Image: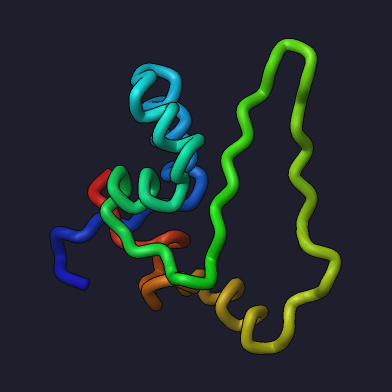
Length: 100
């Protein structure tokens, strides 16, 4: 990582995606249709082949609750979480490199 790379959190990346999807109807439609490509293009990162991104659009009569996985973390996953390492690029950013 060079000195110009900004370290960002997963929360900051989500906020950026939500803000753009709220303001840009074309991006919102793409995010719903092909979330992986939309996220990769917007954040400038590579999503691994085995990783899935699902986007759900709430309505006035529907809300979504996202639950964490049932299985606990193994030792390797705990080490990554404790160190803040990125599961995608090995960079300590949460999701990967981005210029937020």
